[in-house]
Length: 182
Image (cartoon, rainbow, N blue to C red; front, side, top):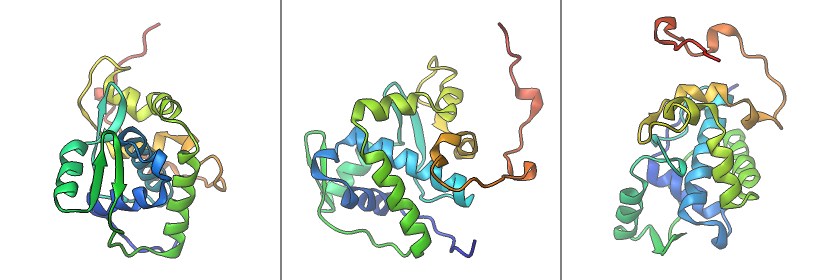
Protein backbone atom coordinates (compact mmCIF):
# COMPACT_ATOMS: atom_id res chain seq x y z
CA UNK A 1 0.00 0.00 0.00
CA UNK A 2 1.62 3.22 -1.12
CA UNK A 3 -0.10 5.41 1.43
CA UNK A 4 1.53 8.25 3.29
CA UNK A 5 1.99 8.18 7.03
CA UNK A 6 -0.19 10.64 8.84
CA UNK A 7 -1.28 11.47 12.32
CA UNK A 8 -4.00 14.07 12.40
CA UNK A 9 -4.19 16.47 15.30
CA UNK A 10 -7.18 15.64 17.53
CA UNK A 11 -8.86 18.92 16.64
CA UNK A 12 -8.50 18.36 12.89
CA UNK A 13 -9.74 14.78 13.25
CA UNK A 14 -12.82 15.99 15.17
CA UNK A 15 -13.48 18.72 12.59
CA UNK A 16 -13.13 16.22 9.76
CA UNK A 17 -15.74 13.92 11.29
CA UNK A 18 -18.11 16.78 12.18
CA UNK A 19 -17.95 18.12 8.61
CA UNK A 20 -19.06 14.69 7.35
CA UNK A 21 -22.00 14.24 9.76
CA UNK A 22 -25.55 15.49 9.36
CA UNK A 23 -26.21 18.23 11.97
CA UNK A 24 -28.70 16.05 13.87
CA UNK A 25 -26.03 13.31 14.10
CA UNK A 26 -23.28 15.58 15.48
CA UNK A 27 -23.91 14.86 19.16
CA UNK A 28 -20.98 14.30 21.50
CA UNK A 29 -21.78 10.60 21.96
CA UNK A 30 -22.04 9.90 18.23
CA UNK A 31 -18.90 11.94 17.53
CA UNK A 32 -16.91 9.94 20.10
CA UNK A 33 -18.13 6.56 18.89
CA UNK A 34 -17.52 7.34 15.23
CA UNK A 35 -14.04 8.69 16.07
CA UNK A 36 -13.28 5.43 17.91
CA UNK A 37 -14.63 3.13 15.18
CA UNK A 38 -12.95 5.05 12.32
CA UNK A 39 -9.60 5.24 14.14
CA UNK A 40 -9.62 1.54 15.04
CA UNK A 41 -10.70 0.50 11.52
CA UNK A 42 -7.91 2.70 10.09
CA UNK A 43 -5.40 1.12 12.47
CA UNK A 44 -6.54 -2.31 11.40
CA UNK A 45 -6.31 -1.53 7.68
CA UNK A 46 -3.16 0.60 7.56
CA UNK A 47 -1.36 -0.50 10.74
CA UNK A 48 -0.81 3.12 11.75
CA UNK A 49 -2.53 5.71 13.94
CA UNK A 50 -4.95 8.02 12.19
CA UNK A 51 -4.84 10.71 14.86
CA UNK A 52 -3.14 11.82 18.05
CA UNK A 53 -6.36 11.07 19.93
CA UNK A 54 -6.27 8.55 22.74
CA UNK A 55 -9.41 6.78 23.88
CA UNK A 56 -10.70 6.25 27.40
CA UNK A 57 -13.07 3.49 28.46
CA UNK A 58 -15.94 5.01 30.44
CA UNK A 59 -19.44 3.70 31.32
CA UNK A 60 -20.84 5.12 28.05
CA UNK A 61 -18.19 3.26 26.03
CA UNK A 62 -14.98 4.45 24.36
CA UNK A 63 -14.51 8.23 24.08
CA UNK A 64 -11.72 10.54 23.00
CA UNK A 65 -9.74 11.02 26.19
CA UNK A 66 -10.45 14.52 27.50
CA UNK A 67 -13.01 15.19 24.76
CA UNK A 68 -14.98 17.72 26.83
CA UNK A 69 -11.92 19.92 27.41
CA UNK A 70 -10.87 19.52 23.76
CA UNK A 71 -14.31 20.60 22.52
CA UNK A 72 -14.45 23.57 24.93
CA UNK A 73 -11.02 24.68 23.73
CA UNK A 74 -12.14 24.28 20.11
CA UNK A 75 -15.22 26.40 20.87
CA UNK A 76 -13.06 29.07 22.51
CA UNK A 77 -10.90 29.09 19.36
CA UNK A 78 -14.07 29.41 17.23
CA UNK A 79 -13.58 26.05 15.52
CA UNK A 80 -16.89 24.59 16.74
CA UNK A 81 -20.14 25.73 18.32
CA UNK A 82 -21.54 23.62 21.16
CA UNK A 83 -25.34 23.65 21.56
CA UNK A 84 -26.01 21.35 24.53
CA UNK A 85 -24.85 17.95 23.36
CA UNK A 86 -24.71 18.94 19.64
CA UNK A 87 -21.34 20.07 18.24
CA UNK A 88 -21.35 22.07 15.02
CA UNK A 89 -18.20 22.64 12.96
CA UNK A 90 -17.38 26.25 12.11
CA UNK A 91 -14.30 25.41 10.00
CA UNK A 92 -12.90 22.69 7.80
CA UNK A 93 -9.90 20.74 9.06
CA UNK A 94 -6.37 21.34 7.87
CA UNK A 95 -5.36 17.89 6.71
CA UNK A 96 -3.40 16.32 3.89
CA UNK A 97 -4.31 12.69 3.27
CA UNK A 98 -4.19 10.43 0.26
CA UNK A 99 -7.32 9.80 -1.79
CA UNK A 100 -7.28 6.13 -0.76
CA UNK A 101 -7.18 7.02 2.93
CA UNK A 102 -9.84 9.73 2.55
CA UNK A 103 -12.16 7.30 0.75
CA UNK A 104 -11.65 4.68 3.47
CA UNK A 105 -12.29 7.22 6.26
CA UNK A 106 -15.36 8.63 4.50
CA UNK A 107 -16.84 5.15 3.91
CA UNK A 108 -16.29 4.24 7.55
CA UNK A 109 -17.83 7.49 8.81
CA UNK A 110 -20.83 6.96 6.53
CA UNK A 111 -21.23 3.36 7.69
CA UNK A 112 -21.31 4.23 11.40
CA UNK A 113 -23.28 7.46 11.03
CA UNK A 114 -26.26 5.34 9.95
CA UNK A 115 -26.51 3.95 13.50
CA UNK A 116 -28.34 5.68 16.35
CA UNK A 117 -26.45 6.83 19.43
CA UNK A 118 -27.94 3.89 21.37
CA UNK A 119 -26.81 1.40 18.71
CA UNK A 120 -23.30 2.92 18.57
CA UNK A 121 -23.00 2.82 22.34
CA UNK A 122 -24.12 -0.83 22.42
CA UNK A 123 -21.75 -1.78 19.62
CA UNK A 124 -18.83 -0.04 21.31
CA UNK A 125 -19.50 -1.98 24.53
CA UNK A 126 -19.13 -5.21 22.56
CA UNK A 127 -15.64 -4.44 21.26
CA UNK A 128 -12.83 -6.59 22.57
CA UNK A 129 -10.65 -3.54 23.17
CA UNK A 130 -13.31 -2.01 25.46
CA UNK A 131 -13.99 -5.29 27.25
CA UNK A 132 -10.29 -5.94 27.83
CA UNK A 133 -9.61 -2.38 29.02
CA UNK A 134 -12.57 -2.35 31.42
CA UNK A 135 -12.13 -5.97 32.58
CA UNK A 136 -15.66 -6.68 31.29
CA UNK A 137 -16.98 -3.30 32.50
CA UNK A 138 -15.67 -3.63 36.06
CA UNK A 139 -12.93 -0.96 35.80
CA UNK A 140 -13.61 2.39 34.14
CA UNK A 141 -11.44 5.32 33.13
CA UNK A 142 -8.41 3.50 31.71
CA UNK A 143 -6.97 4.34 28.30
CA UNK A 144 -7.60 1.84 25.53
CA UNK A 145 -4.44 0.50 23.94
CA UNK A 146 -4.74 1.22 20.21
CA UNK A 147 -2.89 -2.01 19.41
CA UNK A 148 -6.05 -3.82 20.48
CA UNK A 149 -7.66 -2.59 17.25
CA UNK A 150 -6.34 -5.75 15.58
CA UNK A 151 -8.90 -7.73 17.60
CA UNK A 152 -11.89 -5.88 16.15
CA UNK A 153 -12.60 -8.01 13.10
CA UNK A 154 -16.13 -6.61 12.57
CA UNK A 155 -14.69 -3.17 11.75
CA UNK A 156 -13.50 -4.39 8.38
CA UNK A 157 -16.31 -6.75 7.45
CA UNK A 158 -17.13 -5.00 4.17
CA UNK A 159 -13.51 -4.65 3.17
CA UNK A 160 -11.78 -7.24 1.02
CA UNK A 161 -10.46 -10.03 3.21
CA UNK A 162 -6.79 -9.53 3.86
CA UNK A 163 -4.69 -12.15 5.52
CA UNK A 164 -2.75 -10.75 8.46
CA UNK A 165 0.44 -12.62 9.11
CA UNK A 166 1.06 -13.77 12.65
CA UNK A 167 4.15 -11.54 13.03
CA UNK A 168 1.97 -8.44 12.37
CA UNK A 169 -0.21 -9.15 15.39
CA UNK A 170 0.58 -7.32 18.66
CA UNK A 171 3.05 -9.12 20.90
CA UNK A 172 1.54 -10.47 24.09
CA UNK A 173 3.41 -11.08 27.34
CA UNK A 174 1.96 -14.46 28.23
CA UNK A 175 2.95 -13.99 31.89
CA UNK A 176 0.38 -11.18 32.12
CA UNK A 177 -2.51 -13.30 30.80
CA UNK A 178 -5.25 -14.22 33.23
CA UNK A 179 -6.29 -17.88 33.08
CA UNK A 180 -9.78 -18.50 31.74
CA UNK A 181 -12.05 -19.78 34.50
CA UNK A 182 -15.47 -21.32 33.96
